[in-house]
View 1 (cartoon, helix red, strand yellow):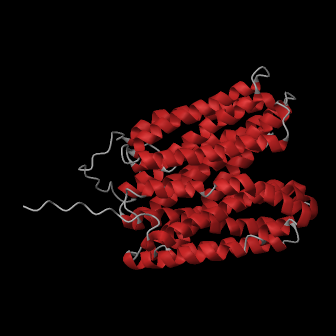
View 2 (cartoon, helix red, strand yellow; view 1 turned 180 degrees about the vertical axis):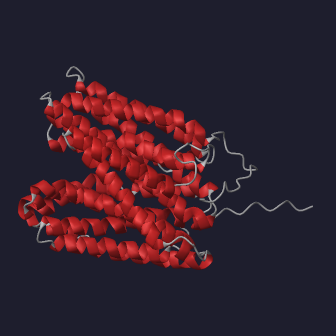
View 3 (cartoon, one colour; view 1 turned 90 degrees about the vertical axis):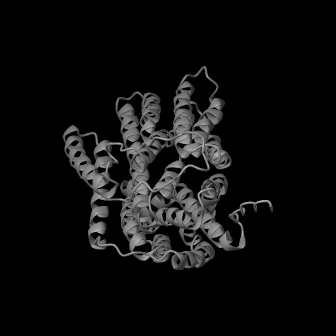
Length: 474
């Protein structure tokens, strides 16, 4: 009897049939990363040139509000029309925002440009997630997410320095306009691959009104904005009023725009959606204040402080590649639990740097630990969703995942900003406030570890184990 034929090895990410999608998505994320790191670097010079320093924060809030709107709308678009039009539309809005921003005559115009840009930027991650889910077998998805994480490394190392040089020595407008030519190549590569994917996975109609989705997206963006404004004001009545209104609106819309059971930690992918926001809340509540800790508390230069942030970026990528290599042996749920523990240790360890007797240089490896934990954990929630949600519902659920991510980041930044601001108002300097932010981040990360047991699973993979879908978004 002839020997049984060996099972065919699936084509890799760089095989001819997948090369276009892999390269297109990686380059697109690289572009988004470059923009995200370049604009904050150039903004002090922009504000000095345009005036309206009191509107400085709205430049970033405008992008966040637009991103929330884009995230919500694109989820419905993907399930109704496929991935091509949402991706192309997102890139065009991103480019339009860059163009208007680069030509803006005033801060209000720049804020509007950033809102438009945010809508386009918010559309890209859900499209990328669904494309990965539909185009790649489960065995290749962890490696693809590792490549997407790697796309942040070069912008993280060189982006701020290049943007600072261009803004200072040439003109800040080139920071916006100079990114426009870079959109064409990744856009063309990814669009061509997505057209093929669209033909292989034709979309199915959705009875959910896009107008209603847009209204819900705008409403939750307003709710999150009210919450962040409430956290930043020092007027107790205003804080209570805006905070209560923002919290009610955000919770109601979040419950409506996420899978049933998300807020109650229903087992499986609903818990994954909520835990993604818990993770980003914990990490970014601290990330924004590492440089402030080193510069204002420990006396480092801003350039030297940037090394600690770069270390976290590189270690995040290292963690992402570790999970890609070990994904054959362990399920995503296992990585989530281990990752939350590592993130907790890394964040809590930063509290040591507040002690003058502790060498400040330890910030680099300590924050690198937190970044490594993020790399292990961050993509696992998307892997759980793509594994358990049927194809026709992936647009809505990946949109919910990105929504949770964005809200977690915004609220983590907002709460920690309020703690640090209160420290300044009490004339205690930034030290106690940064200590409070570190304690908050570590506590939330530890809470995430406890909550992660609601995901279920976590045992070594068994090739014979069935992985049926857990159900579509209700």
